[in-house]
Image (tube, rainbow, N blue to C red; front, top):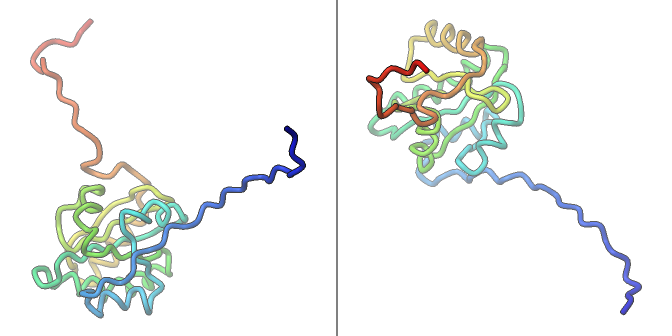
Length: 168
């Protein structure tokens, strides 16, 4: 049986993954990175898309700001660091609910931490709050690094016969 209905081309449109909304318990000093400094919320659902958008990008992991109040200090100086480096990087803020999962992905174990990415690849990380001159210098040095493998990514391979000779 023949049909006169023309076949319609199927065009798949890839929609961007929506960034998470501001969590209710977000400190105002962290939220201002989104509202005043063009930062974006970045979680495990939109990280790859955000990071691959190109250029240098910095993720802020504040940690629990009650336990680690310096997370708020880093949130305050991050736009100043961005300005000190001629706006070279975009700011991403990781919601508390996603920090543990994403921190493991980048081998980070301290709070607060800034994770530096470039064109979707890992560049480096800076943990803790630093004196201003040290912070400016360390951010500059990190931005100058090439893309590398994030620490802690992958599985260490250990031979069961570590003491045996491997000559063939």
